[in-house]
Image (tube, rainbow, N blue to C red; front, top):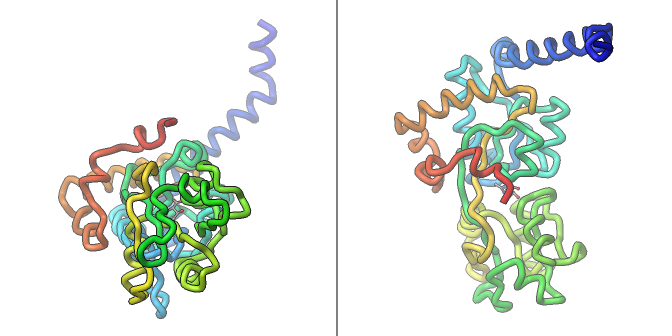
Length: 281
Ligand code: 6CS
């Protein structure tokens, strides 16, 4: 009986009020965004996932999908901020963004930190190396075994984690802020490999026009990942509304029309699910 008395006391009432407030705030998040007139999204500027043109125009498969879904939800536009991958989740948790639309791959540790939509962009991992792949790198383990080899990867990104987990010592995993920096570091011989998803490196190599480098893909032993749009953990009502519109676009073929010109496969995203991708391996 005593336990019930404690539960019914002022502490319990405050807890209920807080939960209600959180719940109500989350449910009103979509209304807030409609009133705001835009959703603040985090991107990385890594084509074809995300791109910012010289005039500031934001494109890329992830923002294009988000812009269309938000429009259908009554939020007219998106406003993007460029962020390092490793800063995106802390940013959404601190409410600096309303959504992450950057190709942030779903992995169990991320799934516990944010509320992901259903899958959107899927891709394998790749290496950018000197022409002929002189050190014969096919996996992150190969890089680990070569005691002088260095690999560049985004800070807080999947490729950094894969290299470290494969046994590449911290001092040989070089944090690279963006694609152009990674390309230059490889060309100058400051890193032996630059690792990003396949479509990102194909885009970078093609635009570089440099025939002294090549893409090795897929990285042996690395999974195919898929991203989703990521929301604050408390914004599940917004995430669910987003998923409902995304599902309609997948069914109508509009989803494929948006992402396939960028090289992504709609079938790949539709063949899996958030539950599968977030399940601990
Ligand atoms: O989700 C990630 O961590 C990775 N996603 C992309 C699209 N590029 C690199 C990054 O490490």
